[in-house]
Length: 143
Ligand SMILES: [Zn+2]
Image 1 (cartoon, rainbow, N blue to C red):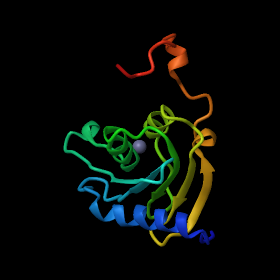
Image 2 (spheres, rainbow, N blue to C red):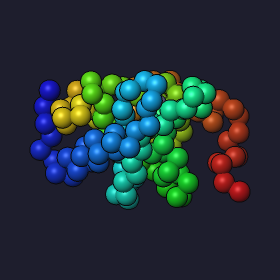
Image 3 (tube, rainbow, N blue to C red):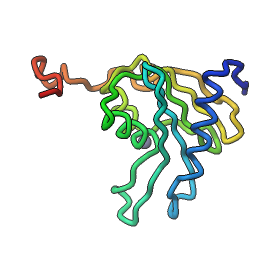
């Protein structure tokens, strides 16, 4: 486990850890915080939000992503996910994030800021399902 010297990424790590404080987790008691940095530098944070109807819950990573996309941001450079054990994004989050590109650096950190994994979305989700598979090459998602 290492700490990162880079002040820029350290602030992203701090943001992810801070985001865990808003986690709504009455069922799992497993707080997750995410800080997703757009290519233009903006940071979008998210926490996991559980629901009595379990499938209605949303992960921290997707919370951050939907906040960004709903604000018109679709290009990302870094993602930090903070959990007590450096847990990794679930498959649904990996897939949803990959919609906007797999060249995203992903840091998985503990709540103390220790880096457990320093990887990329491409490594976390090889052979991701893309719009190419849907033969919708003329549909870029815009109107
Ligand atoms: Zn997830």
